[in-house]
Length: 275
Image 1 (cartoon, rainbow, N blue to C red):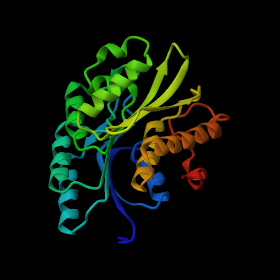
Image 2 (image 1 turned 135 degrees about the horizontal axis):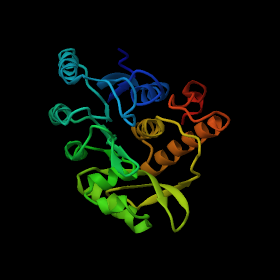
Image 3 (image 1 turned 90 degrees about the vertical axis):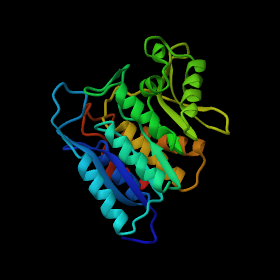
Image 4 (image 1 turned 120 degrees about the vertical axis):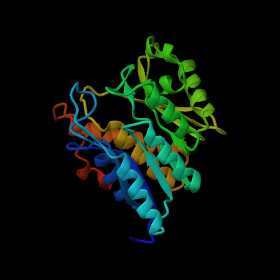
């Protein structure tokens, strides 16, 4: 282990194919200079948007791995959490954070999209994510996840306004997160997609982006990884969100000539462009 590099613990699912979850976040943060410890919350045959998913629960392995690292004296500068296979895993993570809170904690509440929970997940997952939000330096839901976490399910059904998204940010900060970034915010009145963000002691900001017809899995994981890396380097939330969006825009530009694909982005050719 390199004592001169900041250690970051990544907790997310590990799909058996594609550049999503740990397969997307790992290369990005490694290229940004961080030493990574990967802790899968589940092994999945494929992503959760399919009706049929084979899953291996790694909850017991999580306990054993964390105990092994603790026995070796490993400490983490940052912790990034993603998909939780069971609500019980939130208790394991919370116990670790309560014992020794790292300098940086990102909670990416991977649980829903397009107005509904992913297959096999439910309100129990949302409650587990709310528990972790209290420890978050930043929480990074998409707009569906933000509505479910903050109990504003009415926003899942109708067009969003600027005031609606600001209410989502207020609700996320009320959970205890020090900052929040919400992705995938489509404002019908403006016919524009935005990423919104704010910290507890700062103003709301937003960045517009052009929605791509090219479908690539791992978009949220890649955005969160760049955001986490920038924040751990000491950049402001607004600057970090802007850098993350620029990197994703570049990734989508590169993917325009390719068909929609669940394999994610060709990250290897883009790592040199990371901030």
